[in-house]
Image 1 (cartoon, helix red, strand yellow):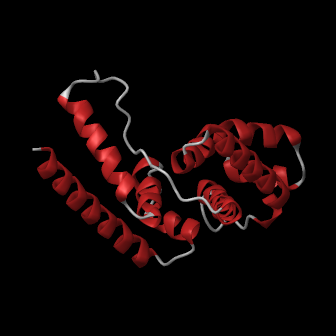
Image 2 (image 1 turned 120 degrees about the horizontal axis):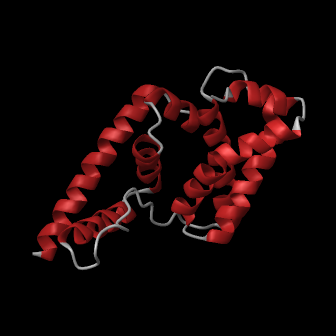
Length: 177
């Protein structure tokens, strides 16, 4: 098993092999994070590369107080927020569920589509906290570090986001009949 902390220490010393290993471990996770927030392949690729550039450049700043994944997603989040400011774009749909194995006209696929549309209606910070908690499966402590907020606030945001999502789904279900 690869010790990610050791990889970061080697990257801090500009070890190209360590960086390449780290890249292969995280490239899909970081790309998916950006793609689900932006729904734009080109932007997701650009922000993924920018994140890796910053990881390489700032590896020496990793203090080991959190998981490497939390640190990497913290950098990714800052890159994402800077991108939003620069481009003045709004966050698009965050899809937490995939319906690939389900036929298009099945009731399950309809439910998946309902959840996708409901998630789309959530505020950006609600989508992000649900993504980190349920898709990335980060513990609340790590989410707090990524978002730069207290753990209690993370718990509150997850609880409130789930409640909002439930309410939206119920409203959409009633509209659907």
